[in-house]
Amino acid sequence: MENNKRSIVILILGLLAAVCPFSIDMYLPGFPAIARDLHTTVDQVAYSLSSFFIGVCLGQLICGPLLDRFGRKTPLMIGLGLYILASIGCSLSPSVEALIGFRFLQALGACVGMVAPNAMVRDLFPAEENAKVMSLLVLILGVSPILAPTVGSYLIATSGWGIVFTVLAIVAALLLVAVMRWLPESREADAGVSLKLTAMLQGYGQVVKESQFATYAGAGALASAGLFAYLAGSPFIFMKLYGVSEQQYGIIFAMIAAGLIGSSQLNNLLLRTYTSSQLLTAVIAIQFLIGLLLLIGTVSGFLGLYSTIGLLFLFLSCQGFTFPNSAALAMAPFTQRAGSASALLGALQMVCGSIASALVGLFFNGTAVPMTAIMLICCTLGLSALLLGHRRMAYQAKREVAAQQSLEILEKF
Image (cartoon, rainbow, N blue to C red; front, side):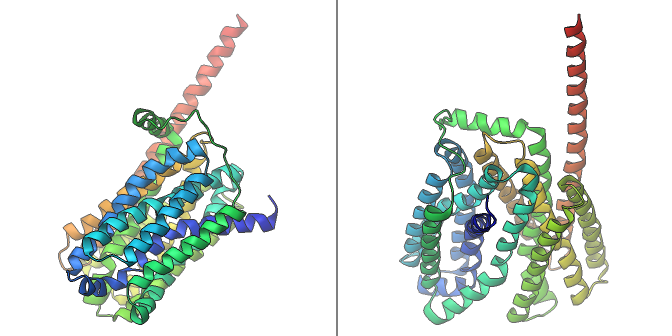
């Protein structure tokens, strides 16, 4: 692929992957305004976020087989079309119930943009380049938590909350044009892929049985769940415990997000010397040590505002290594079922993240301990899954070598 065309393809894939986080981050500042205009409470408006997460989880599992059956572009274009219509519906919602319903439909459309990029990276680029390309996608994705809340706040303050969904619809329409014109079809339709429920479940079962996928998808999802725990707990910690203003919290949030972007590009440089597996193991181990320091510091009361920011910056910067390397390694074995593998990978990340964020709320006690404890547990489980998976893959490799040697001996006789 020519360098110019390659850059355009990566940019489009990165923007597609960013549709979902932008759909979340841009409208969050509008919760009070939505509640006021729709004559409801902020708690009721929050159900629109829950319905979006449910739609993303279910939608990814549905669209994975569709991407394998009909090729990548057709489901992607249909998904963007659904997203555009649902976004318009959100902007015109007369009640909170309608908003919740349209947000669910919006998520079904947005999730195709989460699944298709991973599958297309696997299709279009050599396996040894996948981690580097994933790092570039993380660079584009990392802009979301920096820009989206700021842009959303400005739009809501000047034009009302409905304009946020109108802008999202316009952006999706431009992306649809870009997909139709510049994004190549990376995999032809395969009539042999069945869309029956039993066949879909069997397909996902085959993906899970691949030990490399189970190892790296599981380790990556568990380690990355610490990010969701941070998102759930950080507003209280910074604004209530440390007394920072909303504007200061936005700056802190952006600084930490910038660390994730920078680390993803450092990952690109280190991949010239080390393998994705080596980097992933080292980074999750480092993340465990940082998480341990965070927990000890919060339990003892030793950490202040700046030391907390510093340790959180280091902890979450590890995600810039974890996501691209774990995703590339998990997707590497698949050519025929890359869509299903990508869907299962995304759904697993969302489920682990949702559980982590829910646990932060469940164990809330007015301190930072629940958040930091769950962050440490996440990377501990991720590291354990990785090490156990490595042992399992090494054992399977030895068995395959032994079986091959036995077969060669038998053939001689």
